[in-house]
Image (cartoon, rainbow, N blue to C red; front, side, top):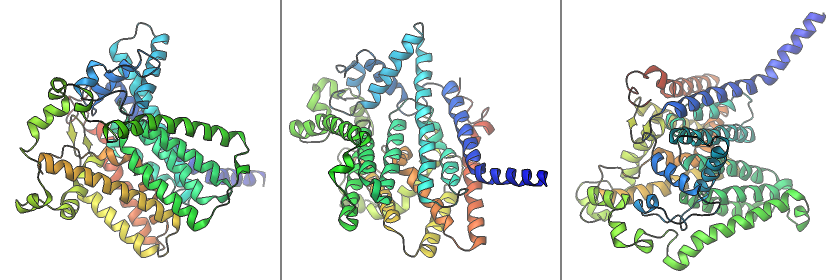
Length: 463
């Protein structure tokens, strides 16, 4: 009897702790991939890593915001008038690393910052699991978004490089976590609202493209307040956490105003153009100017002119090209080297199939689900507008600004919604079949391909 009781307790413990143990395994495997890539990838492979690393070193020369260096001028950017927080963090990390290892080499400093970025992405994986716990009831299905994220090839690849995408994705994902908590829990509405505001404000200081995400979140948050009238009083601020968050928010909003607000006042736009900051001589040889000179059309097309010469109008552009190209760049690699592993049609079919399942089995979505879906659609439409405008400038055969990593600030909630749809499919055969197809496709197209093709496709990617 004692043995039977012990076995029953052991089974109960495994059932209770099993999902978390599997999560730890997924995190460990992901960490192993990012560590391997961080230590072995050649320089100049990951998007813009050389430039980001050079600016980070420039920021390590001072505790504040340094003067514009030569590297910033080559890109036509002003370090004082563009988001700087990512560079500032990297600069501080380099200072600490140099104190610990005074004889460090250039390669060692680069690898160190790659490892810092890998840690940011480990945090994103953890946040994804926490978001899934807020949305998904099944302990096992909460693992699906984590599995999907850690087997998204571009996310894994990007996580091993020096860039401002990784801290941006982490901050946006964390802000979405507290945003979800705010929309779910009236009793902690104020504290959770302050937390997401702090995190999204910090993200805006890392990357300019976070601003549309912040905008739609604020709009939905206001709608939520009008619709639900959550209880709010000054007494809810009567705790140390809320006061600290409020103080941090005020500081971060001040920094945001010092960049975006001053830019609007001084230059009439959120970010200044190169000619607003530098001389014509510098702007003529900047990276973007050279690219424009080499690749741009003689004159930017209008939508009507593009249509007349056979190029797609915005709607046809989205469905004929943008969705497929974006998926290629999410589930493949799009950097200074390109690798698209398998036909994106399989991912496209699974996505549309899952959307159909959602429409079939989720008849009355709640406010939270509608809000998260709206955030994804709005952010995607912002990217479509940016990409289509770029096509009008450069022609419809270059895809200069179309990058899968640009959607990553909202990819965590996209994957969680995907898993939530699967959870709500009441037909067991359909649910299990769809789940197995997702797992098989993500595993087959995931970072395991670095191992399979290490000595062939990726032979010149590694040191």
